[in-house]
Amino acid sequence: MAMTGGKMGDMKSDINITPLVDVVLVLLIIFMVVTPLLQRGYETKVPPKTTGPSLPVSSDQIVIRLAVDGGIFINRDQFTEREFPAKLAEVMRGRESKVAFFAADGEIPYERVAAFMDLCNENGAKNLGIVLDDIAAPGTTAGS
Image 1 (cartoon, helix red, strand yellow):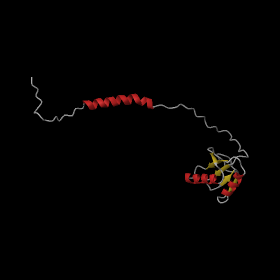
Image 2 (spheres, one colour):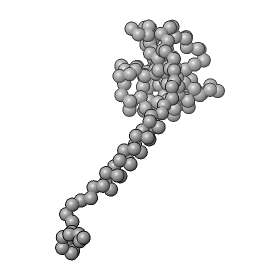
Image 3 (cartoon, one colour):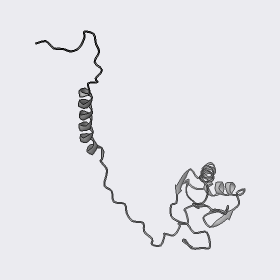
Image 4 (cartoon, one colour):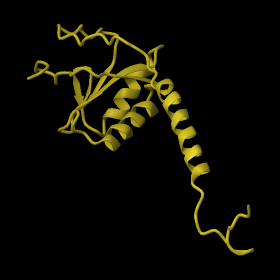
């Protein structure tokens, strides 16, 4: 019973794919087990947006609004870009709370809004609350 396997020193030209198939099947099983574990999440209930009347602005709150036409408002008073920093510093000077609320029209470029927020911070508004609801321009109603 002699085995004939070719001449001594000849190389096999066939690739043994059995170990490759074993590794691929093990990886497939690992991924099938791990994938459901990665699909975790948190169930949250987001409250619906209310469309009722907005609360009136308190007299001690400061609302700064940057309009798309270049108008700058502190509460209902409009100022030019030149007089705004001095007026904001004057308004914030006597206040214990250095909080102001900031609103900007959606069409204004981000860079301008960020620079304007920095200007507000430099002139006394140390904490800026960002208003997400639509704020009407003075003399108009919201949504028109």
